[in-house]
Length: 204
Image (cartoon, rainbow, N blue to C red):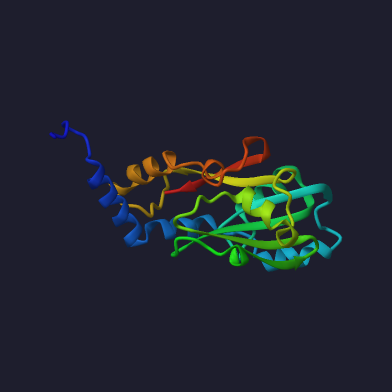
């Protein structure tokens, strides 16, 4: 079938996307995003000090890929609301290179202290990444009740930069892929009433 003038075939679009990933440009964008972020260890140590944020009832789950620094959504919530929930889960979702993950290996938890815990949920590539269902099934070890907790997510909006990480032809493609990606709450099957999205800009 002929390709209309000016259109980009799906295969070519995917090839260009793979090229961006292979060259590591998005890694530079993520590094820029984390510039100035507070180290997680320092944040946890500060929860016992007089200047710690006041705690409020309830459970907050922060979906994040960041382990060494305070998650973006958590930092934004503290900046705008100035409070921290009594129970906090830093949730990491991992896609494993196996079709299915055994339920005994689905969830791992590390207690970080002061009501904060690190929770990792694993799914195989043949499984639907239903995060609430996994937390519900493993609530005893994971902690958060997905039917009562608030799920905080950082929504990153790409904007032009004075010191771009991407080449001129890569920037519109990256913006297109970002804006048309499946939203995390939908992909992980988190019900909209339980989701709080906090936006931040990421310079390209």
